[in-house]
Amino acid sequence: MSTLRVMLRWQVSAMILVLATSRVASGAPDWPQFRGPRGDGHSSAGQLPLSWNTTNNIAWKIAIPGSGWSSPVLSEGRLYLTTAAPIDGGADLSLRTLCLAAKDGRILWDVEVFRELAGKAPRIHGKNSHASPTPVIDGNRVFVHFGHEGTACLDSSGGILWTNTSLRYAPVHGNGGSPIRVGDSLIFSVDGGSDPAVIALDAATGRQQWKTPRQTTAKKTFSFGTPQSIEIDGRTQVISPGSGFVGGYDPASGKELWRVRYGEGYSVIPRPVFALGLLFIGTGYDRPSVLAIRAAGASGDCTDSQIVWNTAKGAPNTPSMLVVGDELYFVSDAGIATCADAQTGTVHWSERLGGDFSASPLYGDGRIYAQNEAGTGFVLKPGKTYQLLARNELDERSLSSYAATDRTLFIRTASHLWKVATP
Image 1 (cartoon, rainbow, N blue to C red):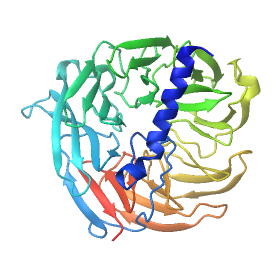
Image 2: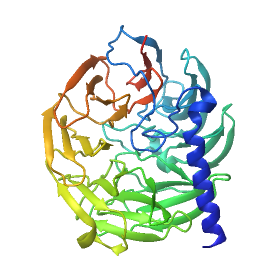
Image 3: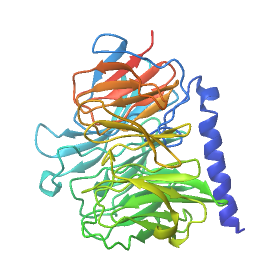
Image 4: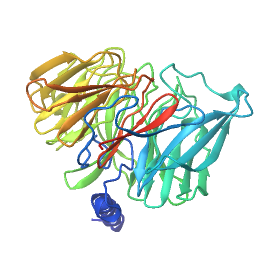
């Protein structure tokens, strides 16, 4: 095994250890990236709230300047999120990072990272924003990403350590996918209107380490996926879905290790989930399906050998999926929640929750939490029989996913950040 590979595996193991011991260090579990410590929607938090509304079990509610759909992240009692705020009331935007005290919602600092000039800003989809990618926290460093406008690293006091604005590309409908930390790299996709690719930056300096073009036959090359890092066959792989296929990549070199094709699927959004030896992938528009892919032994183009099962019924375009025990849970954009056997795809139940969905579900304290675009939160009991435990109204549009810690959910809506807490 090469020295580089040994160092990479040691660094990944060290990062996992830091995340695993965050409860000891801070007294409560952190939520350092999109979908939590492992990127799979699972929280180790206890005593999460079951019911709430605009006045009940609200510890605080604070207005967030500007607008954005990045999800909140949490580390050592501090919340971080991004926003795009008009400059002097005009059409130009200030792309900003905010830090808030989790205890009382005070804004500790609010820093401009980039500016987006109105004449050069892309047209965005109605379900997107100019600040949609979720930050990543690693120790006292906060990584923020604004797609084609650039990527940056800040310290915990709001000082900008580095920026990278060299990766210009033509986004379609704006930006959406979040970056991830793997070893000494910050990895994300740049799947725009042409020349889609997966990128790695040096997390210490922001310099590009590698760029791997996506060789896809899909006619529409734009997608918004967030990668996932897994350990399989004794090595770390980065799983990154894009238009037409999902690929496994070597995080050290960017080499494509394998791919599974899914035709013309584009605008792929759900973050991959890895559990029970299977990768669960959403294939995007126009006809979404869920694929269960056997990760072990994947090599080259393995479309014909590694797909264990697939289904189009109730498949999501936007929300990521969730595995609890032996079951896979997913919610379609139209609000159909499904529980299926993760190994076979056999459906146990499929029920309409109500409303449209963009946020990804969360599992914590023995419950599944899912929120629709109208700000209604649904609490479900996991299992082969459908059980709705609570329906909670915030009465404000929401496309962001939850962050969780002990006794608490943090929920971003169109104009506010809420702390929902168990008394």
